[in-house]
Image 1 (cartoon, rainbow, N blue to C red):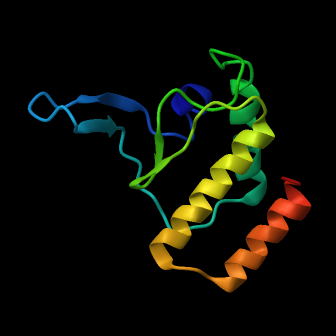
Image 2 (cartoon, one colour):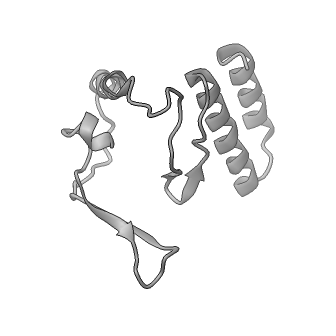
Image 3 (cartoon, one colour):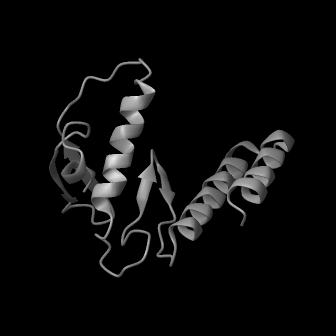
Length: 125
């Protein structure tokens, strides 16, 4: 899906599916891009990100924000269940990933303070 909105910036998907011998296992194969450790130009990166969001607006099958399937941040599944507003969806996704961070690494007073401030002052949720 991302490839259709940013083909110059996302590897092309080549094949995906479910393994016949292991129905609970799936595969995804895409074009190879040799990655670097360089930090991308911030203006160019933000322009690409904005273009993806603008070009994909209005593509939801039910008029809501979210996805019909779980996406992953590495091996961590993301809660993409549908929400009526983008703000609600994003806040829910951020809360979930921060909870996963705490489960994985334990409580962190500084992260808790920053998280509370972010939701209170920035997201107002």
